[in-house]
Structures are given as C-alpha cells and as structure tokens.
Length: 213
Image (cartoon, rainbow, N blue to C red; front, side):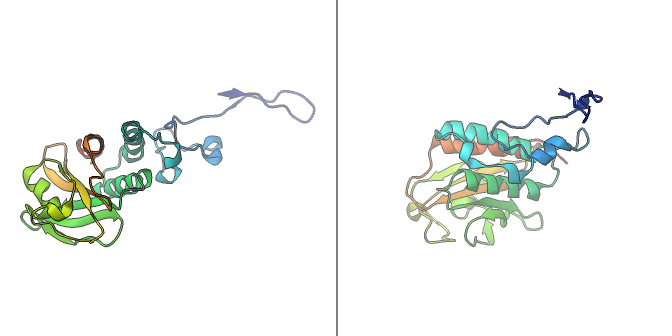
C-alpha cells in the first residue's frame, strides 16, 4: 500500500511503502507486525494470534475454518512435536467440550507401542500397546475409532475416570507410515459424530500427510 506523508511545512515527503502480510481472516492483526514486517518469506502466523471467538458456531463450518488456521500456523514447520503441540492447543481452544486433546506417538525404539506426546488436559497414560484400549485399536487398524461410551468398550484403559466418550484418529506421514494417533476425550456420552471424525481426519492429513522436514 502506498502512503504519502506531510512534513511540518505541509510539503509532501517521499512515499512510504507499507507492507501487509496475508493472514487468515479470523486472526488479529498485530499493529507492530503491520508497521515492521519481517523479511519476505520468513513470516508465519503465530499461534498466540489465534482466537476461537471468531470461529462459527456450526460445527462443520468451525472445523473447516479451524483447518485453515492450523494449516497456516504449522506450514513449513519440520518438527513433528511442534506441529502436534500446536494442533492440540488449537483444537482444545476451539472446542471447550474437549476434555483431553493430544497425541500418542509411535515409539521408534519399541515395537508396536505408543508413548504420550503433546497434549492439553489432565495427566495422560504414558504408554499404550497397539491393539490395547481405544487408542491402541486405531493404531493397529489404522482406522478412526469413535466410542460413544468408553465403559462399554472392551479393554478400555481409563487414564481419567471422568472421560465418558472418545474419538481416536490415526496419524500417517507423507509415506503412509503411522507416526501417532490423535486422541480426543469428552466427559459427555456420545460427544463425537461423523463431523468430528471428518474434521479431525482432515486436519491431521493436512499437517502430517506431507513431508515437511
């Protein structure tokens, strides 16, 4: 944008170029960033600019816009843990009904075992074997598992007794390898549906489904 300034005598000074960075519609523009932008190609939306207040109330629309926000924040970040931490934080902020939101990562040092990764919520189980409980089942099947009542699920592992329903999504990298599962719990029965499954699957596919390292 081209701005012309006036000096104290009323004469025009040379035009000033003010650069603006393209940002997702729902993020707040920081005045300091707008006036003093970083070098071209280095700017990345910061997670602290994210606010869930501007997200639509409709769940499907909320997921769609959140998907864009998360993609913008994590784009170009090669570290998986950093991306997982950002995804967990933004999901938890966007959906207050999520009691526990986070990742269990595949432990490369142990065959068929998950180890707790970045999460938002109460203390999680440290390790879960493939095929055990709600988290281990999708790790073994590589399919999303939505459990309306965890107490009715065979071999359920109760990391927190307040959890009543749970949805777990397998996380695959760009080569189709299982790297983690995304686990979301609620204190309400039947809290998750097909909209949650589709929304969460789309987010992990965007963030982890292509090699960023």
